[in-house]
Image (cartoon, rainbow, N blue to C red):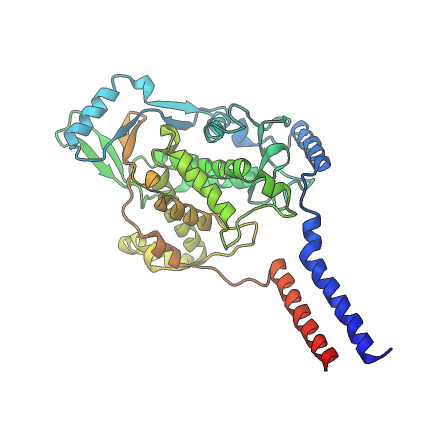
Length: 408
């Protein structure tokens, strides 16, 4: 065999490899897989029957979740007297001020709100055998059949059976963490006293139990709303690709769209949206400090009150990640960026009366871009996509080299 013939065969082989890398994967992810859908339905039904959905928070019937059902306005030129008059009038009908519900009832209310006006309107169910045409939400102890590619520490919309699958331990852990908050940083609580000439008393330390409860609710609104955004906007994308969508550091358009879906829809519900943005800011503050205490235990003990207040602006943390397990603080920062760009979300100045108190949630003016600058993200090894591109580059240069030899 001559050298030229050998080089020609090598070139043909390289071209075949190149075409295979570029086009073969797309041949396997262009169609909705009906057999996969049937298989997912069977597995989810088995999960329900085998009590894999049985978790403490889901089965807790206590009415611990508080929904503000009466929203009042304090924007514009309102005086303290005007606000007190609003409060006095609202207190005449206390049954209209709030609603207390269980975990399951709360998730149902959240999901049904985000599903309004879509194919899932009034078609939401939680931890039940899957039904066609319904949004099927699951909080699982485990996912032994691997319905989600990355179950641990995640909540994912998988496309098939319109199922959202959440790691129950991940949800429970985050909800329980809010019980240990001992100080507030981005949330100002103001109690009213109709008999006091001053009218209001502001505090960053009182009524923290209520703020903790609202932080739990905010987290769930965001978590579930984001996945419903994927269900409504991205089902075709998810079912036609070999990998599920999720939180890569490049924050692609699909993730932005899901977060924008949350930002724009949450404010249309007084019960869910009245304090959403500022509580997201408080969550970022608390999460940053939690990570700082873990990474710098000794320094944390020696912080003065002033240093503690400015910690997010002056100290740094390191946040590790994997493609399918992006830390919640990074997701929160990105959602805050989306909300801050959306004037409809950003300009609402409202409050609700909770458990007989007025609690005004108001940002203290932290720069979230500056906070993000204090979060260091370590470099990662090449992902599979980068390796694929590297192989393509090698193949192309080798092909060019062989072609040049043949012509010579």
